[in-house]
Image 1 (cartoon, rainbow, N blue to C red):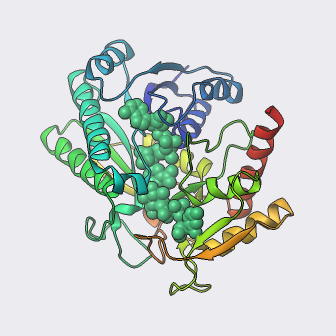
Image 2 (image 1 turned 120 degrees about the vertical axis):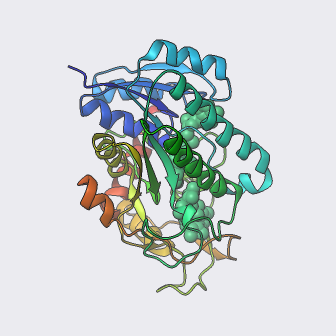
Length: 337
Ligand code: NAD
Ligand code: UFG
């Protein structure tokens, strides 16, 4: 018997699709909503192939409040997991209004529907970017909102505040805010992984394009940071671990707002990631050092203890797993072509 129905916004996207798989595997009924701006409809077929269950899918834009209301009117959801939004940091600097409009208004529309239709449980995808430029390891008691370097990051910070305010005004509301560090990797089946529409911005999708020969070499943004090898350090987390963190958060939802880091607690440098990918693939990855990228911080990694203590969740997969599963996903993609 299915436990209870969960609406996943952005569920054909990278993290949402992996979370859908883990939720279905844990016995939940899942419904997916996405406008397919940065993902493809056939992700639903792949989720069905992995789990043996085809989630209901509706192509809806969160900006279309009337269409969103129809989804809620028919859905009888117990919980909403909210992944949908725009996430390209550089684009948000160039087009701030697009980011504020879609990420904020999309979330406000969603919250309006939740209140109107009596759905009071929310899990939201936030980001380590809300911590700004504080020294790592970052923990949930640290202040946020100072040193955020781009409009995308501000939308995450503002949405966190909006959710907190809704919980004050509506004590029946339960919300868990998850601050992700750097999700990478793919599902072990090789069927789903990171497959953004258009030119990628993040390290692993670019490494994948270099490995496929679509980009000649990786440009490493700076090797003069105050880190062990001079390149930036991040907390890379396997997307399947991250997805399982959502199941743990869901099972612990309680009234009011809870905030958790989802990271491994371990930093890896860009050069370490290049080396790990080369070792996994058995081939060198062409790369060169270029100047620093504006807004990059030297070292970002989580203190992950709170999620472990309160949710019983801990990342289990390591960088070798992240690389192996990324390569397997690439091979499965290549085999299809
Ligand atoms: P993604 O782009 O793969 O998934 C987001 C999905 O939302 C896409 O399928 C897109 O089509 C959909 N979408 C966008 N605008 C929409 C709208 N107006 N209406 C309906 N659907 C819409 O991104 P992801 O990596 O899976 O990220 C999921 C969430 O996690 C995002 O909120 C993102 O900001 C957050 N996050 C991601 C990272 C990361 O590095 N990937 C880090 C921290 C936080
Ligand atoms: N990098 C390169 N070359 C590239 C791309 C990235 O050297 O072509 C480096 C970056 O300088 C950085 C590291 O690889 O040091 C990771 O960069 P990403 O763009 O993959 O990720 P960021 O850490 O900059 O940002 C990510 C998400 C944001 C989120 C943030 C939270 O993209 O959404 O983590 O810490 F807000």
